[in-house]
Length: 430
Ligand SMILES: *[C@@H]1O[C@H](CO)[C@@H](O)[C@H](O)[C@H]1NC(C)=O
Ligand SMILES: *[C@@H]1O[C@H](CO)[C@@H](O)[C@H](O)[C@H]1NC(C)=O
Ligand SMILES: *[C@@H]1O[C@H](CO)[C@@H](O)[C@H](O)[C@H]1NC(C)=O
Ligand SMILES: *[C@@H]1O[C@H](CO)[C@@H](O)[C@H](O)[C@H]1NC(C)=O
Ligand SMILES: [Ca+2]
Image 1 (cartoon, helix red, strand yellow):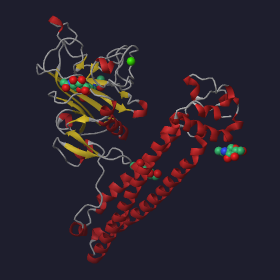
Image 2 (cartoon, protein in one colour):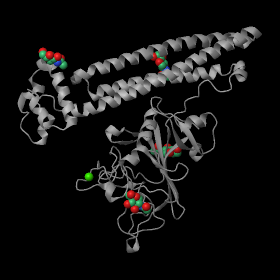
Image 3 (tube, protein in one colour):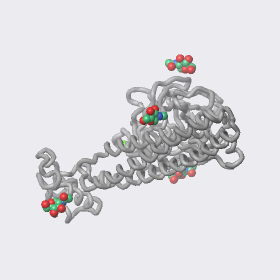
Image 4 (tube, protein in one colour):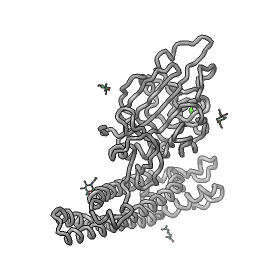
């Protein structure tokens, strides 16, 4: 009875229909409510899957696409756990060395310091083993579930992902704290030329904490289940510890770009760049962040805006922006009014319209990727103009800048010399 579906579906949807067919056996008795729904294919204009014949229309195409990706991230996590396990073994070894040496020399500090970490390490090792097998089970379970798609909602997958993330983050934290203890072992200074396991720096504030004070690029790992990447750290502004996500200063980088570029990031970290929406997401997910925006116009006026919360959702949620309360001198242009509010808006690029402007694409019209409303009271990714300009206001824009709304003679619009957007953990104390 599901054969009619197969005749005219695209291959991607075909896979979904097949899955629906398999799941069908298991849920036959689940009731008529779901059975009244129609096959996704029906949207394509044929009446073949009417009524109770194709009850699984709603989320299956999404699910068949999501699942392999989720499994992929599971592999990443397993790899991460394996690395952790190795780190634990190394730690254990170095702690034992340490203990032996301490026993040899009868060093007073060595006894307490030697036995306690040893127990911790064993405990940790069994935790890692447990997590590894839990993850394996979870993976097997997910694979087993492929035949029963009806119970696998995306939300469940997100829960699993979050759960695993938490576990890995916790273990990483424990390994790091042990690393601090074990590396004090004197024997290590001679026998181990390289550190057992590098500390994991989640963002620039972690580098600040260990004493780094120079503003430059550093490598961060906001989420141990994803790979690390380079960021530019501002260690000077208002106490330092800032992870910079965007910078403009000379127009050397073109910001009129599509979804893929904004997703991955572009430009030069030492000059002008967009860090990338995936990275911004991971950074804002790993800790509760605040956002700081620094602006300078061509008259040398510098003002700033501070938002006491900053989060950018993942790509699936179209990198939706969440900002907290405003404080600062530049004005709250991100939350300008009821009608111009960038908070809670999706990311739009010239080739991907997620804005609230019904008859066009704000990203296309204003030449940038941004969390457009319909359309804007701020656009820090607009074009870089070296002076005042005429025509469409597609330059870098901050709608609460002093005097910016006053009409310029000849319709000239002001532009900005420098912009910097950066984040820092909310609980950071310089
Ligand atoms: C569905 O039921 C048929 C016949 O009862 C059986 O041969 C088939 O294996 C079942 N499929 C699934 C996915 O359970
Ligand atoms: C890690 O997990 C343990 C046990 O579940 C918990 O007691 C501890 O507080 C967690 N640590 C962190 C940093 O979350
Ligand atoms: C920036 O890139 C866009 C899209 O590729 C292009 O149309 C535009 O001319 C470029 N601008 C500059 C100043 O190179
Ligand atoms: C804004 O920040 C300043 C300086 O940190 C502080 O004194 C002031 O109370 C803040 N205002 C609000 C409304 O949070
Ligand atoms: Ca639109």
